[in-house]
Image (tube, rainbow, N blue to C red; front, side, top):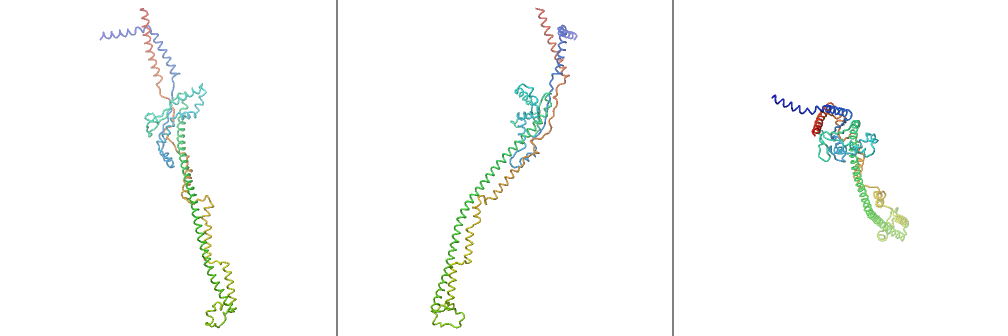
Length: 420
């Protein structure tokens, strides 16, 4: 046991013996590395900051609000996916960064726009979007939308003041662009639907005009036939009445001639005697004896005047009224005079007009619509680092080991030179 301890002491003495000659070098180098470490930790250790915001997918009320219009059919996941695609877009991120004033403020510090772009791209490259379980978001892969998402960005102490405002602007801008995109899609869908309805209305109006033209032709043909029939009835009635009057006139003239030949000038309404029937029955007409020449002449004149005037009878008046109505059909006159008169498909056209008005009155001012739900607003904090004391101890220890190694190497080199 004693011999083993002596052996270990000899080995340790053998190892430390070269360091005796380089003791000042070891302590000097260790002190120098320690001072350099202190200087680095004090003035050159970068202090990083990180800002984070937490949000979840689109609320159900937003989905219900969109689908209630009946124009588009969407879902919470589709709306939220659109939001995530915009928030990860470098174009949107750069616009959000510009809105904070960071680019305008720092552009004079760079010699060229290329250097400025490199600086901005480096900062934006630290923007990360991942699930709460630290799974990085990738819009090309299937990712669950039912868990909270974290949006983060890292920056130096100089950039610490704009990290949270940048995330707030980025979320706000992505939400705005998502809503505007949906609004534009709805506007396009509404306009297309209105165009289709207007075209359907034009077709109905055109069809109505064509039907009106067809009805005008049909009603004109029916009018011609009706007028012709009524005119024929009037002519037939006139001919029938004139025939009866002419027969009556002929009888009166015969009676007048008989009265004249017999010398019966006056009427015999007041005579109490009768002629001998055996002498006169086949010669004298009752009218020729009863009325006499003067009365018969007056009746003949009246009847001739009546025939000339064609005195209208009630049947003739009725037929003339029918003829007037047939020649002046108010419905036909309306169809001819008013080219915009469209009595056909009125209900269908009114329905289309009402539907167009409803589409034009759809409200696209969505004050309560949001494409995501904020669970935690962005906040900035310093990134946790090792304690400077621990780091200084590590630097001292490593510097001491390095100085020992260098001292052994130097002693070996000097010994070799002395031997040679």
